[in-house]
Image (cartoon, rainbow, N blue to C red; front, side, top):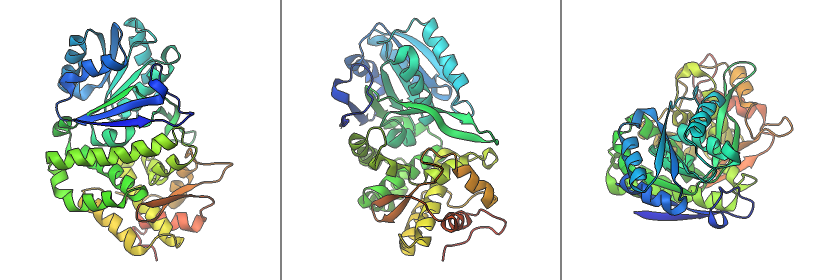
Length: 385
């Protein structure tokens, strides 16, 4: 078991009871049986809510519920459908109803167990129920372990006026009291979901730590086979990168924005539901598009772009769209991104190994070239010149 402390800089919105905005990210195998004791140490109360992905409610969820009961909690179990369509205000309202029916109080912990969708949805419910209840994140997917569970971002999707789904357009910053990542749960994770988490690991390496990219290249086969030591190290290294960035910028006013690398393109891709891509798959394509955009602007070398796309392919992730999108529609979808300021699109672009920048006023030609490089338009993928 490894404990990673997260100490937020001044100004980070923390849940009630977190000492000075500090919490721990605990990672290891077999932690679910000890979950109740760990939760009770940070949020003691008579009752607790367990909002759990319905697909694991009778397996990992049952272990977690038993552990919470052994620690003295009366547990209100709330199964959650983990789809982007169900990550909605209507679903949050259903969580509120269960919390009220179970007589959960302001100091009652809400335990969010599952992937990023459950963490975001239940986290937003915790942030707003009775103006804020303690939140404990228990990620059971690689993507949630290394990214979504750390940093306090919560929220839900909203339908866009012109159609499609806007990602995380309603939400709040609400830091957890504790994150417990039992990577033994990855053994039951579908291979496609595991690969999605690897996209976020690649992103962390591109933004802050080139040695993580080296590690992924060296151990790709072992990680895909869920070799214990390599997976444990991957979660620790990737989560530590995210934690250190969040510590410095809890509310995404500066350096934390770099963690959106690939996400402006990726969220636009996700808004086209017919593509049937998971979040990590869309981010993978988005990383490729961002790299191509940066090459076009002379900020990134072609061999660096090739290295990224090759690694993503080795990890079983897509690097081009499964079907062409009209470039005009793809560019329009980017306009709903949260980084748009005064009507101008800002993009996080890679600028070298372990380096990225938030770039203002990216030329339209560069954005269109990036979309063409991943398959937008009628003529299929084009490699940037």
